[in-house]
Image (cartoon, rainbow, N blue to C red; front, top):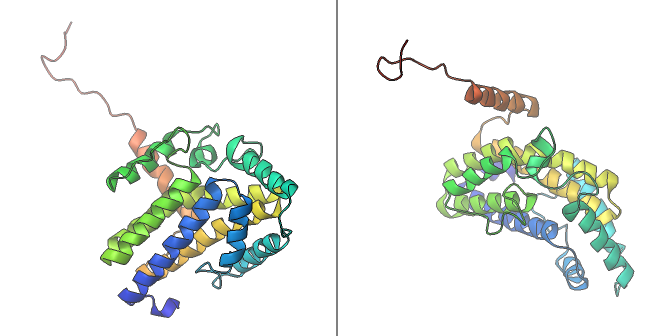
Length: 257
């Protein structure tokens, strides 16, 4: 499929499918499972239906583990299974028991605080596209769910407008924000959470995003920078922006002695 992604129609179809995948993943990270949603996941063949399921060996293995965790749910699902999943969801996404909330600020801020500079940088990205998070105090701008939905929104724009500039924007946003923290988040959740479902869901989401970025690089014909190169570039930008400019004296602008 990669060899055919240069075709604009194929690119549009690809972007639409991936946008749908990202919205589904965002939904699973946004709210806890119910017996009804668990049945729906089985019915739609999740995660095998994901578009990038056959591109990367690590992603394939993670998806197989995620599929096995879903197959292990009893039918009908007893209350204790649902309760265990709900408790794990709360530990990961709500109360921070795993010391790794799915907010970019927590991973990039030196003191691991929420609602820090990364959140405002992400908010600026949204504003450029006339978007705003409806309740940022509940779900901050830099929350995993919002970042996935933003990329899905941009992918829809690529599909409808065939605009490669927007595809380049997606690559830049992923490099500067989502991919700087998502894989460490996925690995920590996988290592510390209580249920196989949420551990493998976190890994699948992270590996899916990594693979998407690789495919975007192929489409754009522009090599993806390494994480190290990206970090050095962003640090240099931050340093340049924070440099104190010397004050200049203009005659008559201040008292003189």
